[in-house]
Length: 232
Ligand SMILES: [Zn+2]
Image 1 (cartoon, rainbow, N blue to C red):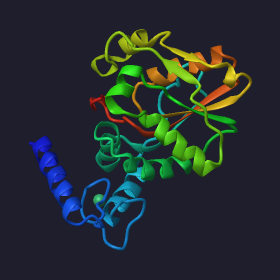
Image 2: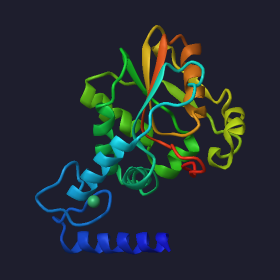
Image 3: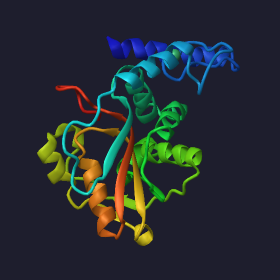
């Protein structure tokens, strides 16, 4: 039902865009935007995201080995979740702009190089782009920091979304490799969603093995509620 609603909204949006090419729609809820807008968002979505930012929890459990800190802009729910889904599965790249803006405001450490979590070649073919790389590029631009695609990733045996935490870790073990570019650097790792931390842990392992001095993590959102579905 929800999917059907989304489908018709999308059709309506495409028709509107075709009828009125200058008419701009909110990247989150697809309502027509008036004069008042910020990063392609309508005022309602801007306010909703501000509320979400205030509602997010703080770090509760121990961090995976090798990671100094994790900062995330939003809980993975409501409008923040919509933006990520638009970006990831409908290739609405504009949805990355408000997410990156919020990420650039996060308190960081003294990192010297930003590195996106890599995607596999298969997924890159499917989606046409890596959403973590897109976020990383936008945040790096805003912070005036250098970035490098210093990690590569081979296909894991099974899709992560199907697995529980322990299995996720096992499934990912050894699937990433970092380039010598990171040697001696404090690295700020960037991803779209932080769920169990297994992806970030595998990336940190590869970065540290290649000689990185430390690894901090920025993500657009984090799953925070028990029983919440992990993002695919
Ligand atoms: Zn909106």
